[in-house]
Length: 176
Image (cartoon, rainbow, N blue to C red; front, side, top):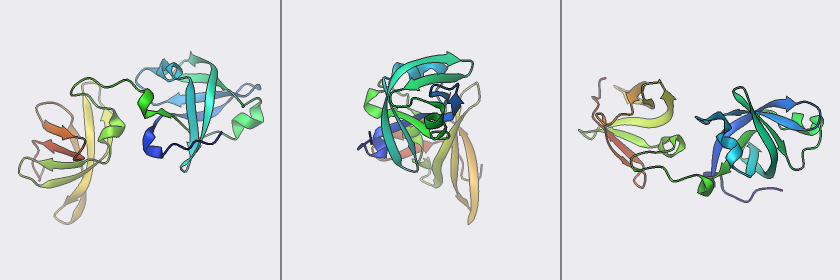
């Protein structure tokens, strides 16, 4: 059935990579830290270009670095092929609350980043995992030219994150 939820109430957790076998199973590329965590959610939303449709997860399993899933209403390979490259999302209110000082990446994307002097460095265009810590990818301008900054998301540099004001304050020079 079509989803009436606005996109901001959905969190993209993966992408349909391909059909799997002949009975309508899907191979999912999860975007989660734990490959199998997508299977914790009984209802999924599959969508493309802002058009979402709700599905009930009937069965699923981890298969290497992917997830194999059987969704209600997808009964054969042809139906599964039509969903290739669709995003897989769950409802935001189903996610566990992050601990104090922790954030979901999608909460940070789009926030304005300013330094201690009040200079606007740009907006968070995405995050990267480096193994040691996450890094904010901030896109803005410097001396009237586009500039991308990679700012480690660590307590020594990130002074405040204000989700309501949609702003992150960092200890970072304008010319870095």
